[in-house]
Length: 106
Image (tube, rainbow, N blue to C red; front, side, top):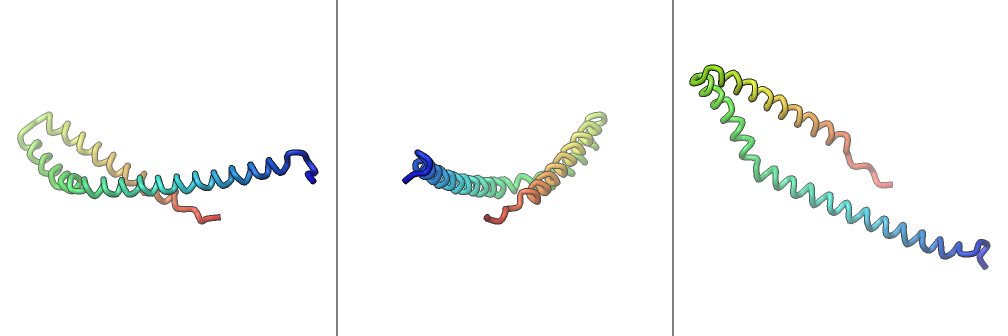
């Protein structure tokens, strides 16, 4: 006999919600893993562009500095800002990656 009317129905509903919540967590884990895989594919696919920029930027800067007067200074500033932004991005992603280490399961 129920001590509180409707308690068994509430307990059954609670169990159902907990199971549904666990299923949703697992679906989210799978989706996050899929996103990580796609991001890795994207990085590998466009990795050549980053290495090409590493070699082409100094050469372009040198050529522009020789041919242009005022434009060379503007290009140098833009290149400096780009390099600083890229370094900041790498630092930010490194810090973010260290902060989001996988938590141990409970």
